[in-house]
Image 1: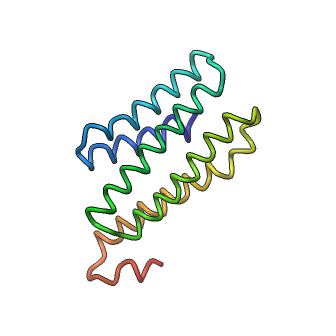
Image 2: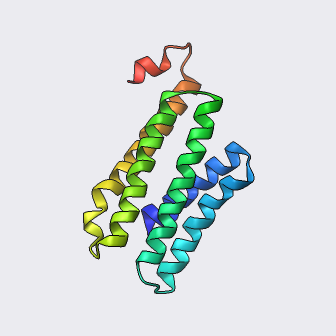
Length: 134
């Protein structure tokens, strides 16, 4: 719930605001639907597919951002999204969430690293900021 519902939804919401397109709001909406599906006691496949759809939209948002301004931090975060989609789909197929956990960790860690890289890029002087971090 924490990774899929809260973190995925919050990051999706933040990026939907940043990209300024209507379709981007589908991502957070899918995450909310997944959360509601869990709370309502629906079969795990329903919320899992909602979360996967939310992560796919987030991946499309990252692709849009990368087209506007190519940057390594966006690629790092998009890598995390691949983990999120894979984790959600694996959870839809496997009853034990523990099998999806490593992919959830990939999503969270890649997102944190990518966002830290973005922050460092903003705060560090010069164009060498990415090289200093990586």
